[in-house]
Image: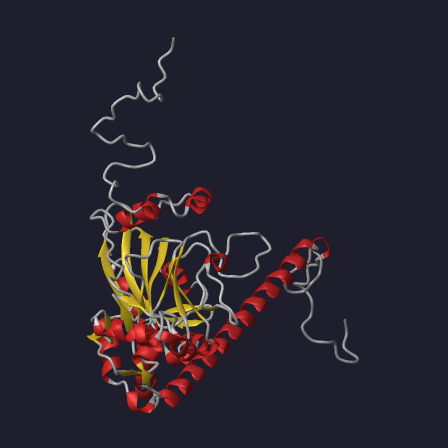
Length: 415
């Protein structure tokens, strides 16, 4: 009779060593369950992309020579300046226990006891019972940010998304390609507005916001919001090519140049460069490298204005900026706008004149090309019909006129 191992008397003793499942790689036993699963499996299988862990390891390895990702999305100095310039007297205040109660954490009496226990902080400082807060203050309970309706209504939401290659920045695509909007959360009473675009094969930081005014401010050319890209090319730039890219390259739609061009190293055929540009024209970075004879094999946007792509954000995932970070960024934009307000009219006129000159140059080039094509077409037609280029007389009917008199005969002259 077979011995049933599941019976009470026949259960086998478990081994002291934990059995390793085939789905867990060595060294990942302490990782959370949500990080063990490959997060972008359907997209990576279609596009042939590596997993986020492998991609970050490749970019940060010594062989690849890339150091582009930041530790946090917005620098601490920007947030500190925003905290120092806050004017709570100009904003409506309310008691801290009321703000916590309105957030749904409990009654006011319970919130007073919670504040007295010392687990509530306001802008990083331990709060006390009776403190008053505004919409600009950051309240945390045991380190967790308290979401308040008053603060959310006055501050637009900003979302960071790590775009993968093989996604399109559009809501509708006739070809049925995957869209980045399918990865975004739903918002009630609003919609996500994309701040600029990235090409189908371009990766990196992509920003979304619920405020159309903020999106227009970040995309308008007159504000000159700088973008930073990590560019991997096949081969290595020469010194003359780097100088040409920094001084200016003439493209079809005008002059373009890099405000910063840094060599990030690399081995083999691939080489990394970190570039900075203040415009968002279509495929501008790729076209500039193509103008000097280089082929871009990978393009990653690592920064947009003051927001950098954090290391903790894998490809295909999103992360929302806190209201404090959004307000600090908007305050930094206001300061930059005030500094450039004096020189804005002159820059606008110079830019307008540059665009007009580029358009006139393009028209002159187009006219010259069309005239050359027309001349070639006329010459080709004459030769095809067997006519001479000068007289238009067919070659086989040409006459010898070497003895032709140069003057008409006078009246009464003998022949």
